[in-house]
Image (cartoon, rainbow, N blue to C red; front, side):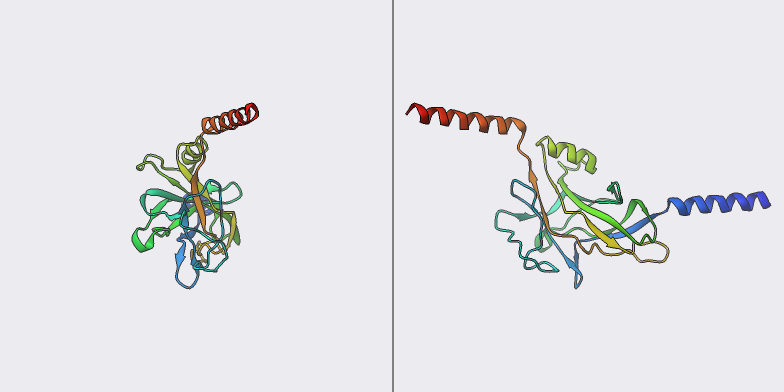
Length: 203
């Protein structure tokens, strides 16, 4: 009996060591946090606009369209190695475009009730649900195959666990996802510029 109790205690201890913290994965929380995720541009941008909370001065013009629907996936990365939390989520539609379909995520590599953790939100075009994680999405993005993007890294305090309730993502800023041109596009642009210079010299 004593051995059984010792074994159960060891299992419980191991489970507590590997238990992971939680966070509310939502970028629209009335009175606390309002940020957006946009599609557009040709480089990574970030910053809150006048209608965000807290309000900022970043001008997200008409060329930036709020993400909407299940065709875009968002994930939260956390911890020293910025590991992907689970589950991922998608975006609301209509007047809710730009906002996540909120959920509570379990962090990887961040213990329950940790004092704080660094985080980064990422989003991508999931190609009809075929790209399901950030590792695959980042590779496709860097290859010029899909639009994707990432927020600046931010810190969240009082991670959820046995004593803390899951916190909100305070510190998150609005950001965009965009398509990186394929290397061949840059090559063609370079050839075009060179040809134009030669043409002008001949004139």
